[in-house]
Length: 209
View 1: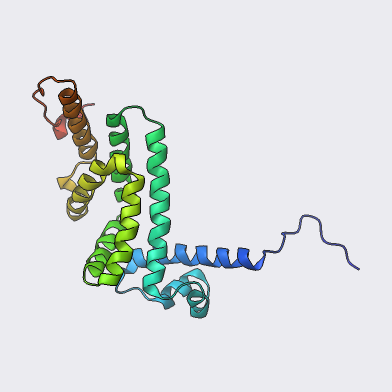
View 2: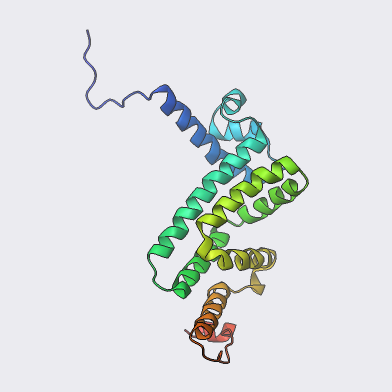
């Protein structure tokens, strides 16, 4: 009997192979959906991008909608981990807010297709009661996990729409400056003092830093 070759890669179990296939399909889905948009993307394209058959895709997901929701789950998990790390590395609410704001603006710059894709699917969910509930359940879970950053999330979504439409309208530092302004005002109110005459730094002053 031939002995096993030393250093040979161990064979994956059936469950491990299935998990690997699922992960590759999700990674491919992220690329295809971002490139094509939700409506234009097809499961055939995702399967081809991942290097699998459409049958392999359907053995892991019920269809395009189920695939997208699973991809959204992965995204939210990654975002929650990132925000929690930001929060753990900072002390004050202002520092946490600014750190989260900077992270979000950087994400928009490096992943410009994601937010429009999110809005596209959001619009679809609004017109489908069953899908809306599935979508909202995920959004609620994300909001609950980052409850201390909800102000950041709400304002960040509004700025994202304007930034992606016209990057010149929203300077990269604006979100962080705005959050610092809000928390400075809240701190002064909590201390029982009057709110000072606060103003966002101008684009020129930010450049001089």
